[in-house]
Every structure is written in structure tokens, then in C-alpha cells.
Length: 274
Image (cartoon, rainbow, N blue to C red; front, side, top):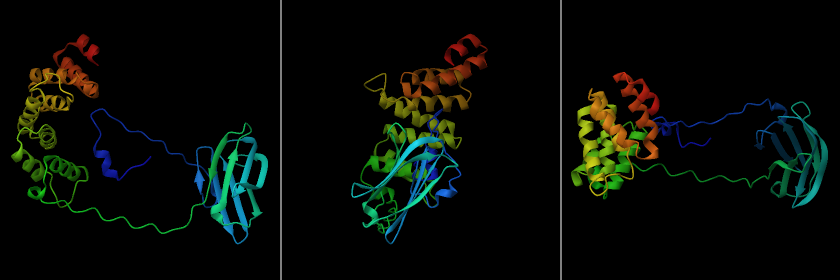
């Protein structure tokens, strides 16, 4: 899996899950692994005029073909069985630079299992450090204010709070949909349900000004939560129902509808919603 940094996991939508799979294998016979898959592990090391290759497989591959080419010309071609216990380790004389080599492994049907081509050794430039956030009043647009506040939330910044950026944006445009929803969500997580409700209602008012069925209904889910936590189930019910208009919020909306149904003792309707 690939991830910028662990705080990225902050942004899980309600009822969303992200999954990945890790594979552990006893590949110590392969040495310094250069490329790997769930099927094959490869190592290729060059010393002077000799290339040492190692091929390890996670399963049994009879009549596997191992090929080493130099500038496209085969210099090693062997058919053998590779498996977790049958590790191929061999050496071959070469007269080309390491970067001219390609090591490839094929199964008995000719399907390529894996290959490895050494890359030129170089020292990559160290990335520039992330620039510090500007002061809210120095930022030109509401979108940049929104994104800066969102970034500070996501990375749980040690010296910045998102509030000034959201509030500056709302000072410039009190009806901004994204900022009202973002700031309302921040307040919701702090347990300030009434204050959060006001921002969700402001966002919804603009969203539905010209279209009663908005493109994005996240603010309805958040409004439903703010109302639910205030004990206003009937109003929350309406908000959650409206949220189900878009597919992105259906899981969340129907779940909370079912929860309220259960609280009311209406098991039949709860089962329908869930």
C-alpha cells in the first residue's frame, strides 16, 4: 500500500474502510532483494565481471525458465524447478555494465512471473520542506483558506489551529458550503452540537438555494448527527433521509435511520433501512 503519512487515515468517510494485504515470506536465501511479488523474489548482484543471481519462489514452479539478458542478448537461460526449498543461485560472466542486464523468470507456460532491471545509481535531490502556512489574512482565496484548514486538521499540526482559517473564510463569505461543512464538522467532533448545527444549516441553505437535491449531501448527514446528539430524533430522521439521496451518503443515512427506528421500537422499518 502507498501512503503519504499515517495521519492520512484521518479521512475515513463514515462507514468507509480501506484495506491492504501484507505478505511475509522466508526469503533469507535470496539475500538483498531487488524485486519481489507474491510469487517470486529476485536478487541480482554484480562484482567485477560476474553477475550473481538468486531466484526464490513462494510456490512450486516446475520447468520454470530463468533468463538473464545483456543489452537484450541472453547470457544465461536455464529451465529448472523453483520453490521455497529449491532456490536457484548461480553466477554468470558478463562484459557489460550492470544497468544493461535484465533478469526475468517465466513459468512453464511462458508467463512472465517477475523481472528486474538495475537502475543507474544516483543520489536523489532531497525534497524541499513543506512551506509554513500563511497567516489567514494573507491567503487570497476562500478555497486556499479551506484547504489550509483541512490540511492542519488532517496532520494535527502542533503549532497551528484550523479555526482561524475557517473563520477568515466565513468572514469573507458566510455562506461558503465547504467551509461551513468543514468547520461544523470540527465543532461536531468537539461536542459543540448546537454551534455545529448552525453551520450545517447554513451550508444546506446555499446548497438548496437553486436545487432541492444537491450534488453532495454530506452536510445533511452531519446535520443529522448534530441533531441526534442533541436528542432531536425527529429532526435528525428527516436530515438522514435527505442524505440518502446521493449514493455516497446512503450507507450512513440508512444506518442512522435504522438506529432511530430501533429506538422507536419499529423493528420492521429498521430492518428495511438497514
